[in-house]
Length: 375
Image (cartoon, rainbow, N blue to C red; front, side, top):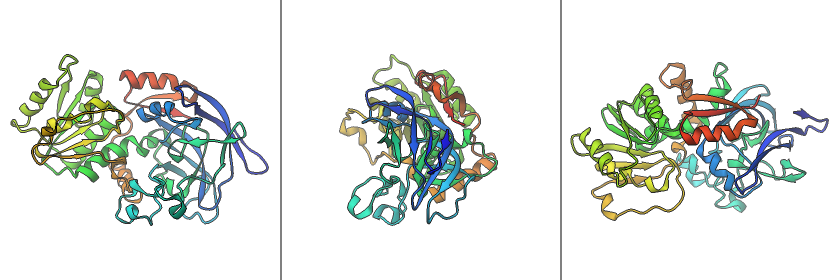
């Protein structure tokens, strides 16, 4: 890891080849241009999206959750200084497009590149990150599985000085997605009921969000007892161990209804990432209730239209409706007041070279949230 006399930084990064394989390679990262920040990464969260990115077009610098410190800033960057601890977010809002003006910054049209000639891009300058001398893409315009990340300033949020990066890094996706889907998107009200299908990194934070929102019944559902036990510590009031033989989910649906006076929950969340389960929340929600698919599951799914009966709303929110300037300070405040838990979520820590083990632990359900320690 070094910075040469021209200001180019070099260091290790995990590169996916697009065919399911990855390797640790050296990359070069330019000094930040106008409106950009070069971040020295300290820690990065590992999630199912990172595993999926092994098959995205490669080569690709992996990783989209991360925290570290500002290494250098480009012209025009305000309110950030070298050495400052920071969190990265992948909303990267421009602040001026149609979606940003309506406070839907996770849908920023510049970040989603809907009209690049007019709006530009939320990427750092072209060719600013190189592998083997050639420009390389970075996951979510970040690439947090690396020693250095060159990003737009809008991707950077200052961190409280007392929040360690190996805990803070998971705020950038798992916590924001889970908690935000509850408080921003579903707008769960005190006294309402919630079911959470899948208690991995995102699902556990749906549980936390439901507790923060004042839900009185929080039903956690998973096939792994250890995940349910974690959900209990974070606020779940009822635990349902899913039965692999309940292929049509009739037993599970009956259990949820039994806990909700026969009607189903006010809000049902899917956080498994399994396409065939994406519509199951519709069968767990009451008439007039909300069903939310928060895992970003991809692939084929089918649904009988009567599952929407009656007056049920189905939502697939992105990033918990994240508005970085609004949401991250609120998360920091909840952490400082002991209302939002991070320490017990990070169950495993790994060196950069142990990503394979981090994926294995995540996929078998033995980890709540794994974190790569980069520095």
